[in-house]
Image 1 (cartoon, helix red, strand yellow):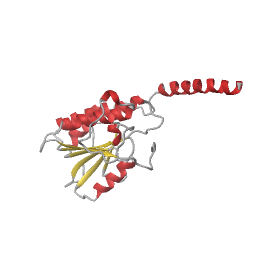
Image 2: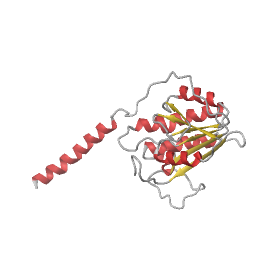
Image 3: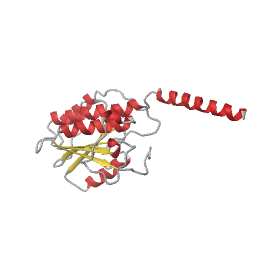
Image 4: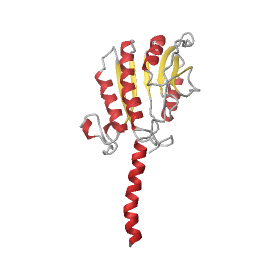
Length: 221
């Protein structure tokens, strides 16, 4: 009985300490500003199509689907090299000044984002920086530089992980910002709302796609 009592007291303490330490882990994905101002040109006769997250699990399939369009110059911006893309620009989405220089250089008609940091072992700050703050800056850059189309691969998490999603439609009431329980979820929702508010028919066309559960990549849930 004493052993059980001790375990019942010690276990919550251990879990609390582990959670405290986890919440104070520094972001694993660090970055430094890039001074790069030289961007290789697209092949002649091809239209620039800029992709963020082209090497993510879902991004690879998206790139493959657009690869059939032979007139597109697929430009991947990110930390990893996209073998199926025409060009690769190494950088971090949080480096907004570098991103703007690149967008200004290529003048793409379309930007597609499929950015998803790993869900496991990541500091909550990374979700806020990548999914929300950097995405808002990217949307502002795209509109400022005359991009015509913006495709945002969002997630069902934008309406909360803890809600029933089967049969959900655009008309369904969305949670209030203060009702979200996870940083990942609210970061997706805020970026999505900002993008949709910037839509201008025939000038800045935007679309947000909420994907469901995806099995097979890092951080699969």
